[in-house]
Length: 297
Image (cartoon, rainbow, N blue to C red; front, side, top):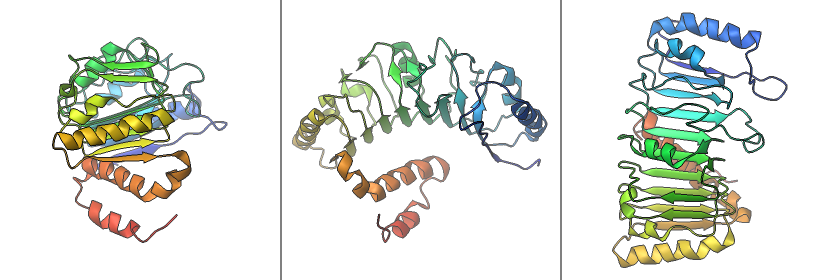
């Protein structure tokens, strides 16, 4: 076990994830306390909450690169800035089936998560409330290249305003999934100087896609999938305006819900691109995509 590098622990209790410690969970963490002595573990995927009680265990994982776990409003999250090699962080609300049902834990007020390792390249948050201060903290991560917000809420309400002082310096991939926002404002294209892909999935209340996206010369893909019908026209206008300023590489795809199944391969390719970007440098991507070419849905 001293050479174990990747661990995934799935625990199901009455068709839901545990929000309190059960004897099974206590046994798991007792096992982890012994296992963590190997100091080579790189992947830790837990379907239970990590709390401040496990912070001493995380300190025994100096080479951890991928961390995924549940979060709860009643469980402050451990300090993770000590994980100097962490590259990917996935945090999910404990109410997995409907993250909006019992209220989303606040990233700062509930989870007390105010410091991230500077090594982080990818953050995936599901069912979490974000304030402008939280967004500012995330934007300051100098190596962040991918940000996925699913079923999240903004403290300001139905708007997400990206002010001029907010700058995601290296962000290349931004995905907004099932966000209950009506307005998304970007004050300056300088907020996303390296952005390559914007994926909007099932943001059914979003009325307009920010026109500032047309001014981002690095943008290659804008995908609007199953969003409000009024978002289609702004998306097309963004493509036209981008062409006018010389961005010929931008591809805008607008997918309605009844056409979503016809785009399975394209979405699979996007997922593979993101996965191999972080875990294998994209070396095997072309071979896998070629194998998918002959498959139909």
